[in-house]
Length: 312
Ligand code: RRO
Image (tube, rainbow, N blue to C red; front, side):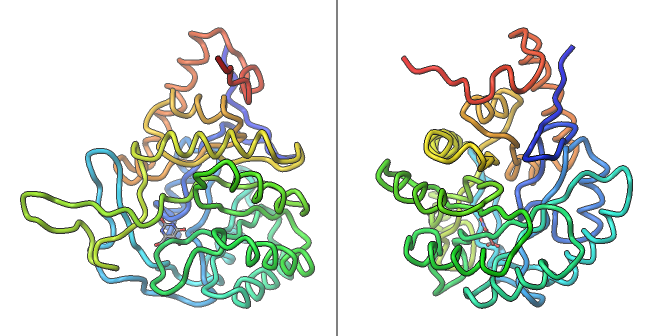
């Protein structure tokens, strides 16, 4: 018998799978569809204080090996998502939920965190430090000084479980620096990785880019990014305090990919591009495939292989 239940801080989920923020989580209808699916829990679209239309369309393109997007933070505004999670958390059959915020400025981040802190929300709040797609706004988490300043200020006013969404890093020296910063704070978790920022897909037949904003530059997801995602999960698991949990995000197409994320050290695993392709039914397939992989290997619980990656 395989048991997929996933412990995350002091919470337990039926399985480790959930959506990646930005996919199938803009509206209450989509969020309800996630709750009705086989996903263990959900995260809302990263919110700004007020409604944002986002970048001009087409702004998302599914590709043979993944996806490219430059959505530009379209969302319904924090009150919409906060109302949703507050209403749902009173229902007995609803798991602990994740609420994502991504301000356009540090002050907006702090204002949103203050609002969540003062609310009755009892789930996990995720501060997205890695949106790659707002023209003129570099990703906070690639600026180490700004990241430290942000976390200093955030933890002065926020008293609930807080996680951060990180962009991919590509140099071992960056993992050392970022982990040293993160280890100073009582973070509940990190979520790694956001999309690989500012890729450029080119269609040779038409000699054009794939999306309209930013001249075609956009965040990559899907198969393109799986090894980068696994590297980030593993590098941070090797460097972060045990008290900081890890959500692994990036490149999951199969149950074996979910297994790989957990083997690399992920506690929960998010699905973005494949969810956009298949819809919420993807979670039934992925949980079945993960169970099959575990059964073949005679593993009964996620703890039997979590963070057990072998080196040569
Ligand atoms: O909305 C977006 O363009 C977006 C965001 Br906020 C993010 O964090 N990651 C991404 O790939 N797209």
